[in-house]
Length: 424
Image 1: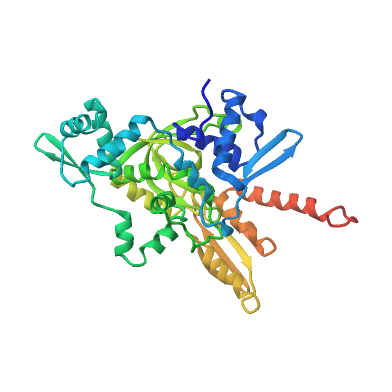
Image 2: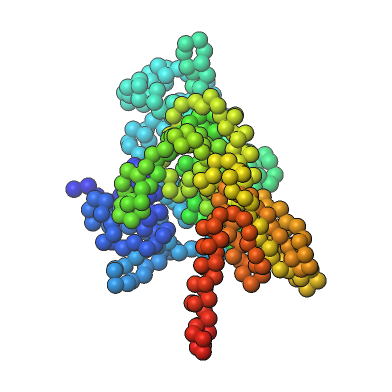
């Protein structure tokens, strides 16, 4: 019987499990039906070993739910980085790593055949030439070795770049590394460099650090590379069933990646892309994406990028709605009451947060916001924060206006009580 190990071979499986059970924290053991109860126990112990003191246990009639609880403003390092340091390896992986770096440490360039022969002569280990080729190719992609083609033969050299040398050479680089190790985008890389150098972030604490999005960092390099190469990507997303019950295939979309968008309210990240199948732009939440795979060059990438930039001017948030062009629906006009003398901060907020909308004074203490956006629902979520000051809502669709007035009626029933009753 195989023993339990903290190391993992497939990060995607663990990423989905951490996401569903430990981040959202609403599932219990009985909700887990991927393979067996033992699998649940192994995954739970594995995450507990990574997270240490950041685990929280809540008991209910459904059972015990386990989640991660951490205040980012009081910890110097994102504990979820530990999940990236748990990949398993074979004995040959370890041997080849140290043997190859020892062979190439003299700075000379060598072919695959030369490296294979030295492995046999110098260390008494016989490796297949294809195994050595695969390992050198992997190290070339990761930047550990440099590959140079001379004629028809590939030569490999140990890269001269050393993080510890750069830290000593450039003043302030260590502090910059500490800071960027805790930023959202690819902070795991900065954290890995710190660990390699035996350093820790002991300077910067980020109060509103959206740590859970660290699990998406594994997707970012592939997406950015596809953008740079103007390629299609195939996205495999978590299905609705997988969110509730376990690891199921989910849906698949072939899209053109155009930009990564970040919400300033939640820190949630989205991939804005063009879907050729339906001929429209859309935004995919990164935490719902299981994997990303490049799937061919897009010849019209620049033209689509230009259309995207134009369409982005009609997005209040990240949603492109169902409208393909503007003009089919009249712009919405929301009039808000604000006293310029006593409440200048209201006007300042309208001006600061209006985004792609226009704001003008339409009367005494009245300001009208005009918005021609693809998805008015996103706009209305923000507009509702001015409840008590909204004078009128015009334009848009009937359904949007009806929903707004219906929400107001529901709030009135919920909070005003009966005619002679007390306020709830």
